[in-house]
Length: 138
Image (cartoon, rainbow, N blue to C red):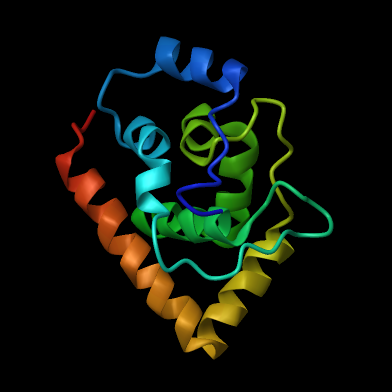
């Protein structure tokens, strides 16, 4: 996924997000600006065999969200499955089953062994942190 290939927010997720969240919420801002967040320098956008909608940039974002909320891999996987705000930010349909916790763990292992992946994560983290700092808190 790059800025040019970001899929639009699915209609069901967009409707739910607009109904549930105030304008300017952090995850809504991420979803609305996903193309800009993913611009330039992202690693290969491979897909998971078990969840073809899960791309490396989505795992990047889940890792960032996980960091911001101090979540375990299991909690982050559950959030992708159950939270409308995360689905909005990740441009996933409401009926998306997310991904297996093992995929996130595998990605984290890759981060530890591939400095390029870690470098890309740091760039994304800085961009998301700027949105987070500008977002209202509940």
